[in-house]
Image (cartoon, rainbow, N blue to C red; front, top):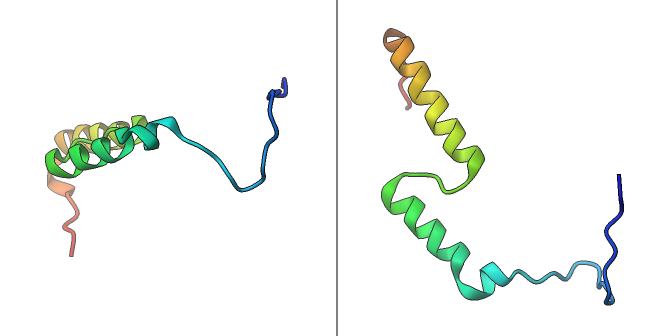
Length: 65
């Protein structure tokens, strides 16, 4: 595996995200909460997978308490 080289100094525990700085992360979170549609790949796969399993076996739905 190749190591990533950076040109500047890296301070442990400090990072910068341009997406968070521009508000993209917060907008995605608000969208996901209002619509119920996940904005991450894993979340979308989990939601679609559950829907498919529920269609194939509708009688064994577990009820949430």
